[in-house]
Image 1 (cartoon, rainbow, N blue to C red):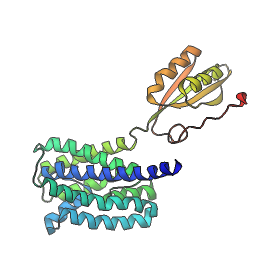
Image 2: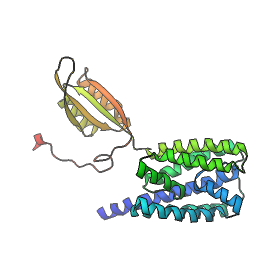
Image 3: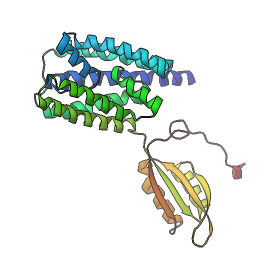
Image 4: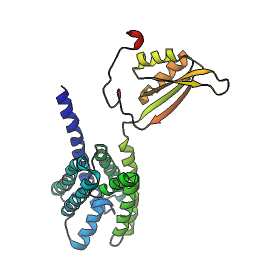
Length: 295
């Protein structure tokens, strides 16, 4: 059973990386290339190279990805390179397959729709791949290197590099294409940030109450969430009190707050959004043990 679970845990990220690259390639083929949007990243550089030297986009992307992969291996380590090598080859291969399958087919000639849908597609695809601990290779690697060495946010570096490439594309592309390219970059970096935390956000509750024992039992038994008790003292009259700390799913907020108010109508509740939680009950399976009073 554990061996099957281990295999599943290894194959799932690989499947997500491949899916992300398929979405990336399809978005480029169906929305970006037909509309002529000034795109940043590896594909943007490939468009510049193709214009001046006639080198096919998929061929240049493959060569560039291999170069960046070597840099990533030297700076980011062997584990990163092993996960990214899939993207480094998958994306140009899937892009070439998409070119052969769709040929000259154009889904829409509306550049506005291409900008919006292309931005969402690229942002979502990149988010899936980066969440799996890899990258799509190419120009995604320099921002990750900068993030490791100088702690610069990945999305900020991606935007800066893309902006430079878009400006270079202005040498031979119409101004409308450049302006749409800037909007495109804003959209995909925004979607990328949202995708990186998609489905991981949770709610943290801090409840100041004099009935911490009753509230703890209620959360443990009726909501099946863990609880931590913090000793505290009120600032005005210096009464000893306790703070019930618990992390719950977003849909459980109403249930827990109603429990708290029913048990202690005078309780003080603080609700905060947590971008990600790791540990038992969230990223790992729960383990139930007898409580001290039950032994």
